[in-house]
Length: 384
Image (cartoon, helix red, strand yellow):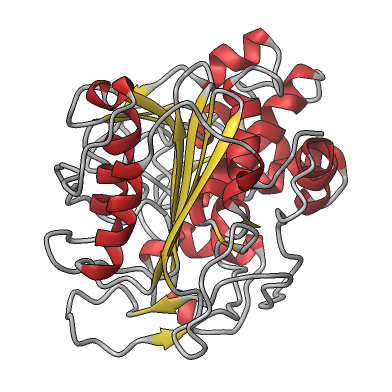
């Protein structure tokens, strides 16, 4: 097993520009803390700025765990594709085959929506997280209750005729995993991905457990308010059942890099399923320059460089993990808040700067770029 401690290796590239972005995120962007890990040519670099806890002023550490939001989708999709490899289901199976009577009403029809369409967001299924009043009625939710919320709204479009990001797609995908295997999704993720890869800080919490176990940073939220003076809440303990297979997991920067390096490197799926996962479709009103596959995305950075991975946001935590298609250069980053101020409208702008600092063609020379880490911030909404 490779050494998971970033300080144990020296990478081939100068990361001064990346560290500059981290420092600016705290100094100019107003975030409590940010941490990043780079895997590059077999080595690691770890950088941090700000604090893990605004009360104790403890620095963020490379082992800190955090909620990864929609990066959960990549784990769920990988489990689905492994089941496809094993012949237990097919991407062209309808939802109705595995979840009879669940996907119906208001233009939704499980007979016309496939597993593939759930995973690449072309199903037209309404996203239950767009109905926040419904998610405020009780403390926790079952997956079935989340789908019922979605079914109370009209479908976004007939299956296969458009693209819209829907968290309900992945709630349904998680339900299908459990129907096919007869086991909890959390156990499938643990046995198929976390344990074999040595992802010791990665898990999908069971039920309504709000606790963030192990070393972790505190999570701070302004409830996605654009008001710079909005009240800040500590949501380190958070009941995440409304997100589950779509956004409920916990991980670390080292674990995320290790998982995505294995995925991009073709070590988790057979070639046919790898091609399916990375068959990208255009997206609408999501991230600038993004296309979407089966639980993964491709970003075209402002410089023209392309990176593959996923981003995720949840109350108090915002994360990205992206890398080169051959997996030789990876970056994972987390902000323990869901806002950014100054020249950035949200953390995506900070992450775009950081990705440019690491992956743009001008960074390949290995020379420092000084205190000016470029770059063009994104104005997109949260990825989760």
